[in-house]
Length: 209
Image 1 (cartoon, rainbow, N blue to C red):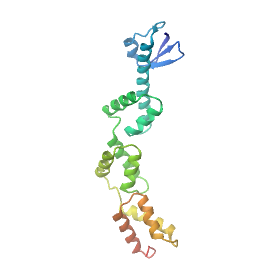
Image 2 (cartoon, rainbow, N blue to C red; image 1 turned 120 degrees about the vertical axis):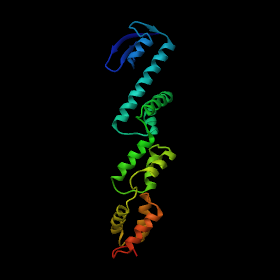
Image 3 (cartoon, helix red, strand yellow; image 1 turned 60 degrees about the vertical axis):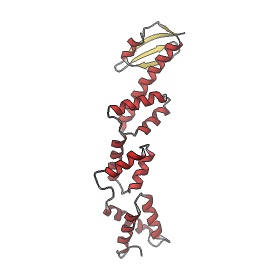
């Protein structure tokens, strides 16, 4: 049998100390629901319910804290919480609750990621999709976000400058044009975009021949 040794009322939770040496944080309301009083002896089933309530509470608070740092995809948050040892059921309850409250939204997250990427060095649609897939954004959501992004995904001038800078470093090397095309593909640009950039370079005195 396990004895409840003490209860500390904190600002955002109650901390229940057990004779096992554990201190379980639970919501304030759960103190009354589970009839938690110092000196009370609980059996194995009661201990399991109290432990589960604590895990659910800690899982949700941890999820909120993780989201407060920056936006996350549902999959990123789930991986993080599972890695902290929370049960899959409590993880899914937490993500569902956060999604319902509007704190977790894969589409909004994808749009935010695209916007941030557009403010850095030029990348193509395929690179953006690959990044979103790696972050756990579902394929249909990622493709919709890329298709519906309100700004221009690929600025031809940015792509041209990127190609020109890379080719300047490749000039004189063997298979320079092939290496340039490979580089641009790695950056996620599509065939037609690459072709136009290379053709424009070829019109320059210093461009590929």
